[in-house]
Length: 147
Image (cartoon, rainbow, N blue to C red; front, side, top):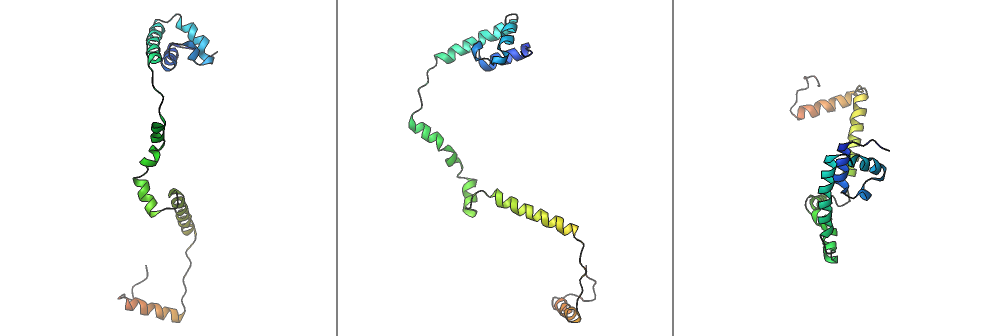
């Protein structure tokens, strides 16, 4: 048996209505016991009974097949905006999967690059002369130190 207070009782009445058979079974006995002595519960039960009777009197025709079909097709119709544009450039399904793969590869590359010590570059005499010609041809100054 759970501990029942007036706040919880009023919440049960508001959620499930005035009929105790609709209340949660594990709380029903405690709620009924408290409802007998609570003026606020009596008022809430009266209000809920009125609402229950109004809802019980209202008759709604069952939905026809065309309405059910239209409602079922709503998600397909709503996906026409951004999803259609995305499918135009990426027709292979969900774009988040390859994007997450690229992001993971970039993160791994950054971590490995930051963790690996820089290698010292050594050049032969021929490579050094080729490098100097490329720098000079590009308008650079060979005397400047590399940064």
